[in-house]
Length: 133
Image (cartoon, rainbow, N blue to C red; front, side):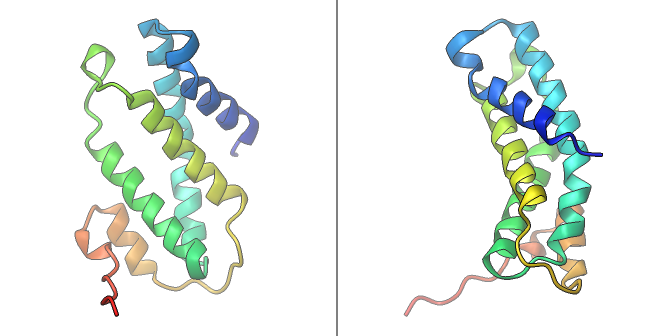
């Protein structure tokens, strides 16, 4: 079960970490909590994304793609993290929670293969660009 208040509290704390608390143990704890939240939210949003429609679906696909890419390159911890890492996790957590809480109009599942491709890191999940007119 997703505890929306806990997710929101964690990402809000992380977004403020550079302002009020720069200690590494605090950053490590926030990163760990956000990764846990992302691990819970990700499959829920993937399940919703196949039923989303219109711009909300495009947003969902974009967020899922970014989360999978970010987490697949996430072998860093402690002092090896780049500046802003905790805010990146916070932004991803916030985006996933927003999609989870407000998925928009839902219909019958479509494009299941597209979501599976994102899950497995295949670039074919990237939507084709429309030609400029």
